[in-house]
Image (cartoon, rainbow, N blue to C red; front, side, top):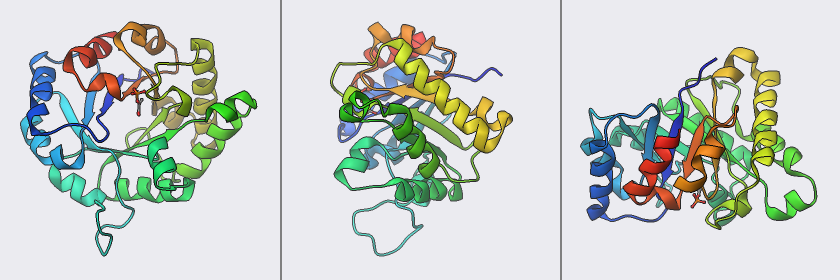
Length: 246
Ligand code: PEP
């Protein structure tokens, strides 16, 4: 099965309106051989979606609440993201799991909310450094995958991002054999739960200190179907270097 690569940028809590120049540069660079998704902060989702309308760049959110609406001060629903023009949402990023105490069942509810609103859910999993050192990487990401992905997963509605917590924003990455081992295990887990057709179609992204200099080597791995990129997605020139490698 040929999976179209996906390169997704996660701007986290970065970006004011003037940063639309970076989006304009991505659009102007032309359509690559990969899907491109940019997830700016909530304040920019609607304006970026409008700006990117008709281009090859899709816009996504970085999180959503599990409910469609209600008394949840400061939260955003998946329906609101869809209404603003988003087509996807990241759920279960390790910074959400750590900063907001989100567990697998919360992430699963958010993924279900994403699907209810017609968005693709990018479900993040990843081990801490202590868990890797203890030899628990596959057990940890396997449990996160099982607990965070709802039963109605399909190749169209689910993307899984493997992001070792210790590699995010640190400049450190696992060696390629370590990335391959986890991605192979994720694909096998999806196959045993959802069947080969779904598992073969779901895109598995690697995230954690991806940059133009290491993207080609990582994205060439058989079960790596793209990247989830934080810091290096903030500047179009860097992000385009990664997109070109996909
Ligand atoms: C991320 O937070 O999703 C991420 C991969 O960050 P960075 O690329 O900066 O490590």
